Image 1 (cartoon, rainbow, N blue to C red):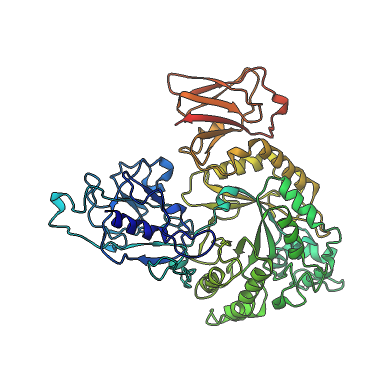
Image 2 (cartoon, helix red, strand yellow):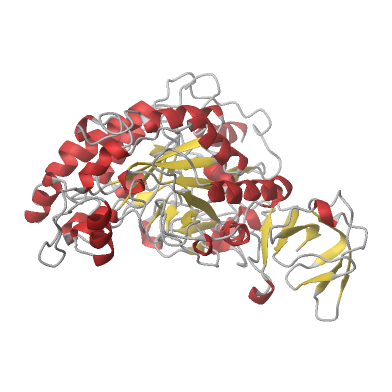
Length: 636
């Protein structure tokens, strides 16, 4: 049996690239001939494409669960009465048992057999419906008792050659030691692209800052849709524009104007950015406790914040500040050790080629071919972003411009991005690329707050100014969310498996409103004390206690610690009652930021946990701003 076991292990080893080279390796020194169940977790592999692994001679393997913890199971499998083996169906979002298993022996298994509705694969990527598998685990070990199956299987199931098909990071042409492995090629199909692995940093980061800057930052009036609202005759915009800048020429019969002409394009020289300090921006974001930034390279006006050859005389290098704003900020962000995301609007409201494509009902794709594709590629090659954050595919224009495949050709760009670009192994993408698009993480709508667990990784973009992404001079203090509200969105988002992308809008002179800075600094101070409940955390069994109590839960990756984040301030001699955690004799409880002082607790007859705050807690030192964290060990 040793040779058979080696074959199994060799097949699995093909999935694991070596550190120093891309050569295939058979090195599994601890598992060459296991006497007990040896687990191989596909979530730990570098999974990037479908490759068949077929041994050169027949072998047999057994499938068994090895003391799986709840966190090891696919979401749909949690709480199931599992047989010794299981798989996850991407077709039905359900957990399936593999065959009729007895005494650790399995029927012959073909994981790709569509007749039983099982497709064993793994992905962190999600489609728009968000139901693709989170994880599938194979537990493989050798039958050290002999090759023959049990008597009841002997005649019906003779020896088999098993084909294991999964998504692996490197393709090896044979099983010969030393064969060079090559990176897979991603075809331009959503069905194929959805199985690309997501870099793990994004799941751990939890918190990013969105920075929205454009020509709309010059008038800074109401919101970033200034040009579109102006051109479509919104009275608020037209009257403000005609009064303060000059005649827009919009609907002159309805909005008579006698001054000199002034169009939206005339704002370009006024975006001077004379006080722009990219190092300061990066420092503000770092001190906020954020791990990444998403910066607007282009909004729907088509103006780019970098020197784009496709946007001649309509970018920040040719006009206005005469700066590569994106490039300068990128350098500062990298110095702070932050990840870089680049926002890029797909549509451009008034680009002639885009309007022509709409007129042709998208039978032509000139705008995509001549503008979007080369711009995205130039931007990717030049700045090497960690995230490409697309937006506005079609908006309210012709229905045909919502199609991610036929019009935007997003799978073609993704294929280039994952196969040829300088960030092919590291870049992330969102899902706003048109209908049925697939990305590295699911993107809800703007200010998306589900307050319930979402199975796949997701992100919500959320504004500090309540009504605008770009800076709005009109809004007063009451129009800004305070720090407590922003923390509430962060905590509830992370508890439900999401990331918060919190937006600020800089001013046209390149400065950040001090109120933005104050809120971000206070969030950073809170995260300094409570960050272990946020960064690297995972969703717990329960997301919240009772909504009225505003208590939300997260857990550490190893499931050893559970964090109850309460939006009720602890008081000397007071108590906090939790309904969901079930303590044990080994349970300990502490309040983060309270110098490690252990908290006493009691359990009432209904199972409620009463946490008692002593009078000697260092309340003055606690980072409050509306949220406090109880760290609990050994609870269920």
